[in-house]
Image 1 (cartoon, rainbow, N blue to C red):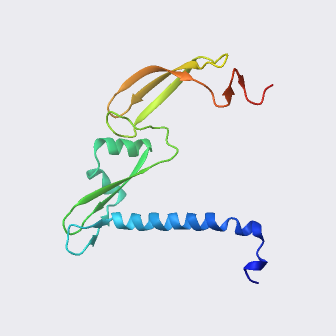
Image 2: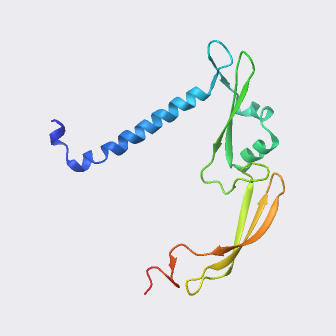
Image 3: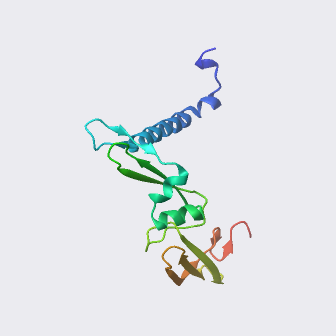
Length: 158
């Protein structure tokens, strides 16, 4: 059974699978390379700090990000020179956003629609932003146009 016996539909996914495997391999190499201390003539592999001991190395903002479930931090220490590297892994489904003031993922948004769009014109919504770390708060109004709204009517309705 050679390649000629494999249906064309199955071969159509081959480039996608190869690209995905290539990306995963590249990320694995980057992951390993970043955890090397290059401050020595011969590169030294850094040691991962246990989860229970990480708080010593994290800032207050980083600790809050972890407590909120917005970011997971990994801390590595060079066993020879004690250089520390901290890596932040953003949690993809966290409700916390990036705060432009304190630079941490500790900000939330609350939205309220004030007026619906009509006659092809956008409505308005009030957006209240607040940060749990630095205390920043802001409320402003933005245009509101729901997804699928076009020319005064929703798609799918005639």
